[in-house]
Structures are given as C-alpha cells and as structure tokens.
Image 1: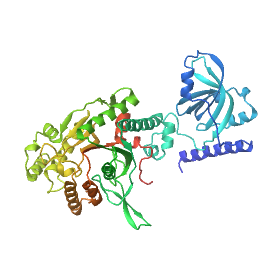
Image 2: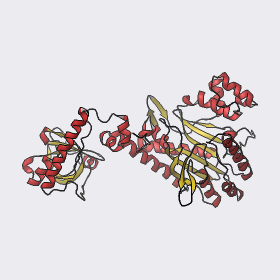
Image 3: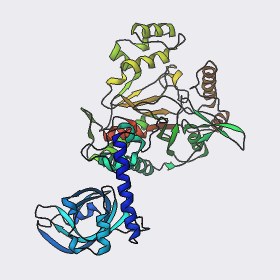
Image 4: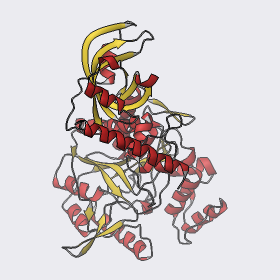
Amino acid sequence: MTEDTNLGHEQRQIRLNKLKTLQDAGINPYPNIYRPSTTSADLQEKYKDLPNDTQTEDVVWVAGRIRAIRNSGMFVDVYDATGKVQIYTDKKNLSGQDLTVFDALDVGDMVGIKGCVRRTKRGELSVNAQSWEMLAKSLLPLPEKFHGLTDVDTKYRQRYLDMIMNPETVQTLIHRTKIIDTVREVLNEKGLLEVETPVLQVIKGGATARPFITHHNTLDMDLFLRVATELHLKRLIVGGLPGVYEIGRDFRNEGMDTRHNPEFTMLEAYWPYKDYNDMMTLFEEIVEKACYKIHGTTTIKFGDKEINLKGPYPRKTMAELVKEHTGIDFMAITSGEEARAKVKELHIALPSEDLDWGHCLALIFEEKCEEYLIQPVHVIDHPKSMSPLTKTHRNGDERLVERFETYINGWELANAYSELTNPLDQRERFEEQVKAREAGDDEADMMDDDFVTALEYGMPPTGGIGIGIDRLVMILTNSPSIRDVIAFPTMRKK
C-alpha cells in the first residue's frame, strides 16, 4: 500500500469520526432539505455597490461546498454553482449545536449558512455566520488545491471530482447546454418540429459506419443501435410533417480518438422544399447564434488560432480543393485506373486496387486538404459513389452529388444533402451498397425496402443536414478533446 493510500485511509477515518460526533449530538449530517435564499452571483450583483467595511442587517441563507478553511476557521470559502461566498465566523456568535457542526467541518463538506451580509475592509463581500448546518459530510478528501485534479484518467472517470476541482469543466458543460438550446431556438423559429425516432433498429442505415449489435430476448432477434436518424426522419417528411429534427445519441462501433466517441450527439434536420444551398445558410445561422450566445462575438480562439465564424462561408468543390493543394485536376480524370495512379503519385496508401474515381478523390482530399481548412468552408459537390442518399448534381455530371461538408479547424462539423427522393435511383444506390457489404465492407448500408417503399409514395424536394454537436461544442469552447465536452465519455475498463 502506498503512502498516499495510507494517508487517504487516515483522512477518511478522521472524517468518519467527525460524522459520528455529529450523529451522537443528534445532528443529521445528511438532512432531507435546505433552502438557500440566494446564490453567490445574486449576492455579488445585489451588493456590488456596498462600500468597504460596511455591515448590513440583511439576513441570507447560502449553501455550497467548502473549498478552503482559513485562519483557524475564521474564514471559510463556500462555492455554489455560480461562484464563491466568503463566510466569516465568530465562534462567540454560535450556539452549542452550531459549534458542534463548525468543529466538524472539512474541505469538501456541503454546508448551509445563515448570516448577515457585509463587505470587509479589504473589499471582500462576505456573510457573517449566525448558524451552520451540515448538508452532506464529505468522507473523502479533495485533491490538493494547488495541483488540483490533473490525472487525465481520473478526470474523465470521476467527472464529478473534475467538476468540483476545475471550474472550467463546469463552464464547458453549461456552454454545451446553451449551444443545444440555440440549435433548438433556430430550428423551432423556422417551424421545424423536434421528434424522436427509434434507437433500436432492424436495419443499419443512414450512414457509412460499423454498428453496435444487441439482442431482443422476447422477439429473439438481433437489433442495431442506430448509427444515424436519417431514414426514419425522412419517412416523417413523406408522411407530411412540415420539417423535422432530432438531437439524439448515435452509436458507432469504431475507433476512439480526440474527435470520436462510440456514442455521440448528432443533430439531423430535414426541411421540405429546400436544397443543400439552404442547408449551408442554416448551418451558418446556427453557428453564429450559438457562438454569440456564449461569447458575445463571432470571433473565437482555438488553441493559438483565431477563427471567424461570421457567415457566409466560402463554398469550394472537393475537386477544386484537391487541385489547389496538389495540382491534380480530378475533373479531367475519366477512369478509376487513372485516379488510382494519382493517389500513388502522392504516396498515399490505396486501401483497395478497385478504388473508384470518387473514393480516390475523397481519399486525396482527406490526406492532403482537410488539415488546412482552419477558417470555415463548405466543401461542396462530393462523389456520387460515396453518397448513397444524395441527389445527383443538377449540373448533369453523373459523378457528383449535391452534398457538402463544412470544415472548421480542419474538422468536419456538418454533412448535408439535397436529399435523394427518386425511389428507383435510391434502390439502385442501396443495391450498390449491398454489393460493397457482401464484398467485406461492414460499414456499407443495408437494403431498406420499407424506406424505398416510403419514397414510392412521394417525398417533396428536401434539404437535410447533420451537425456533430460534440464537435461544435469543442470548437466553441476551445476544447481539444471530445472527452472534454461529454459529461461521461466512454472509457476502457480498469
């Protein structure tokens, strides 16, 4: 057993002894209710003009967690969700029961204090304690205050401890909620309806991804955790809803890194009588308003980079960007063989000798272009072979579809289409996906006959978009890892 472990056991035993002292005195260290009358932020606002060295007769009830005990307990820093309240205590003003509670205090305890508001000679807004109440006796010591919680594994496994020690974690999660609220506000204002679709699905579809598989005992059948909400949401458009969206969890049984978690939050929205151009404008509005809500500006810092999120964003075709960064004009290439040769010229490994024109274009774009797309840009007009749910481009080039992905800081944040509504074309695209799946591509889509049937009843021209909420929060909160913006990220078993 290490010295730190021994010390931890000793400190816990000391706290257990204090707990017993409280209980022996008839004090419940875990009461059913306590009602604070104000918060730290409200106190600071209400008394912002209170002069130094001023005592009021205003009595308040405050509550929070002790983060520091100074001057033998004369000053105690108590933190609630909005900030710090300094508590001043003169033991002569406490009853016997209050003294019992006071003597049992440790850093980490949750407490309630009744007292009068004052401002000290040094200008610190404080509460002069008249009574103390233990709200939750902490049995485990917090990490040492000067070093805080720095162990990354503990930070993500014990998020509650991370939040106690690192106020920036709390702020990031608060910003996440505000960003999602903004997404809803924008879409609701435009008349789209928030809906819910199944997480458990019979057919894996809506995205090129490897799924999780589970089993339903009563039905004795395997089901997939959804990789996307797309196909069910578009069924609702067929049914006549005026536009729909879902902010929900998707699940993909793939690798983990700073931008990928096996379960993640995705917005998908489908808007009748719109196309991919309208979806670009919609994305810009969402990002601008979310950024302004939490920063008061549309210019942000990410690491050492300054990024301007004010729209409109440039629109560049995938082929145009490849030509810009490599000098290769893919639109002049007419065969898969020639496209594969270009990949090899750039010393990029080919995953297959059968790679077609579209997959070669996308591979070069990923390897040679993505990392340079720091300022927002809509990458438009993707290869058809990689976009089984998207309309062929209206310019007549059968190799391309009306699809874009928006990149910021070198990351893909949005993926959007002019949605494919032709049922015959859709069936052919699914059949191509089935062939790819049979050839060993377990990320390819399955045939969804019911979805094709839905399209045969008629779906209006529709624009659709998917936005990775976690990545959007990362960008807007200067968070380098997706684990920083997910309250409880997936972790390897200890």
